[in-house]
Image (cartoon, rainbow, N blue to C red; front, side, top):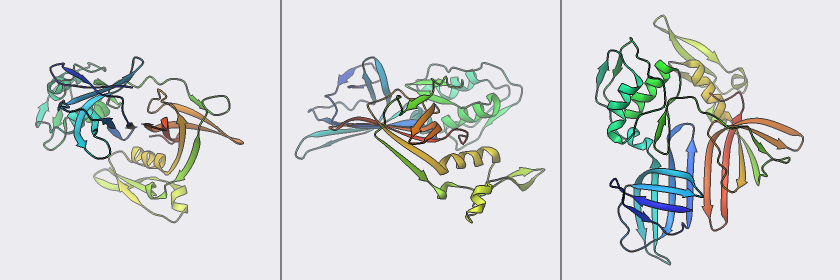
Length: 296
């Protein structure tokens, strides 16, 4: 595993082999998060960027949040970092009005100043004005435009922004001749469930979506939202989760379908969260999945 700190001028400092790494990607978090521990060298530069790669595969390229040196039984350097989406999440957008908005125009003003070179997505010009309110992040400006005008989600990976639908690989086969797994855990997170979601219609709030299964438990929770169906679907996807632990680091994508073979049962899943770990015990990947069809 090759880990390199670098600065905005292109200067690089190769780090020793890591003692441990955890890298987490989540459908609900625009920025991936990484924590790595290295044997510390004297004079470690306070560089702002970190890149992790192995055998030509870039596992992470992002912005350093903290550098921490500790002295004890061993001298260690701990680095925490997030993918480059963090730059847009942490920056507040200037209020503005786009009378004929387009994705390239928004990217030029809300992403290019932070080092992003364009975006993959539609260049269509819209006649419906788009207002950027005070108090929202640069990321939210772009994400809201992609959702409202283009009907899709904004994503970032290794410094590349895209508003195009993800090109997902074939279903990941787990068990029964596919990739072997070390452990499978099923969890029922009742606290995540919603019994009803209300939305506005004709200027009034009305109940628009219900979950009969949740209502039958006797647990009643209500939410209000601009898109009641999406709010309910997102909640349902968090109730029944299946976690699969595998050895090694697999190139898995968020949203990728997976087929899990258990004793006497086969589950159709979709990956919601990926947690890569490296330690003295080796490499593992933990996949948190919802049953296919429950994903929002």
